[in-house]
Length: 346
Image (cartoon, rainbow, N blue to C red; front, side, top):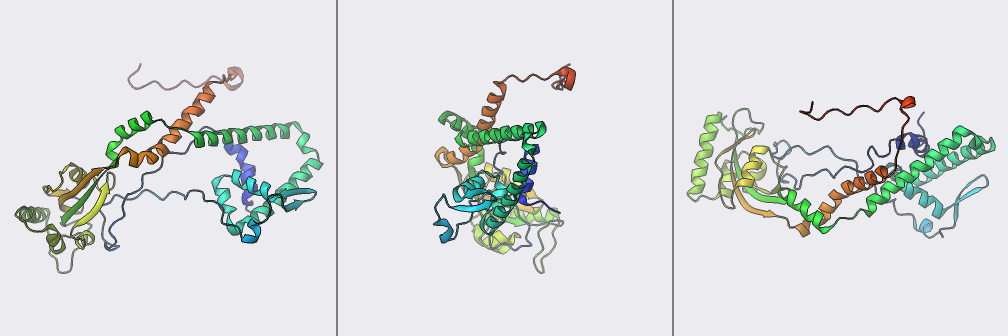
């Protein structure tokens, strides 16, 4: 038997929140690929792009829009009655707003009524517990007090996260330290595959050894230097079917998007310069950089501020914790574990 979502959350929240502070701030946003593979690239064509990180759960979304007749109800309209207790529209929506992301998503749209039914069942049980005076027992009073403190601590962490402010100097320092992350290059290439490559052979194409593929790549580079058009050569000779259809163009790429050898060459080339043949697991590449640019601080400021917020929040939380002395009785709990020595320290 599975517990209803709301009941399950409220029953497990106290235990989960006991660990408040172990992970009070969200991790920095995972860097996602800036550009997808070309739309013309066949699904079976191996990509030069590194495998994308595992998809993250979607961010919490606002509850679905209420039907007009429900949205038009005044905030003080009673929408749930449990025994002699009444819950208004405003109180119910405030409750939903305070729930964690997962519970808020569950309560959105058609699940809103189900959440109301679960809330009614929960309150019915709580009313019976009060009639039996369970709320007056020492153990329950302590649990209620602990739960209140957990909710307050969690609300404080949320407020600190929301109100975290960055200053211009810190944003500039972050930008300078991570400037390479905001570079991008527009590149074109011609790929010559060799035996063992994950790139499929074209119909009636001869299988080349590494030596033969390298020789062919070097010959193509000479033809390009002599003035032949890269787009035409890519369409005729490149084994990367996706980019060949686009005249060899891979579009704009950022660091972390391509396999290391290709990326290193692409970002080290000057605009208009041709690379020597670059070997990857796909074959040999002749790379040309069509454009090299770096986003300005103003362009990436919102992104940087978002990345800095978790660290700022954690510092604020650490400051609050360190400002209050906590004394643990060693006789009861045992001595605190000795921290491991730093490497190289005897």
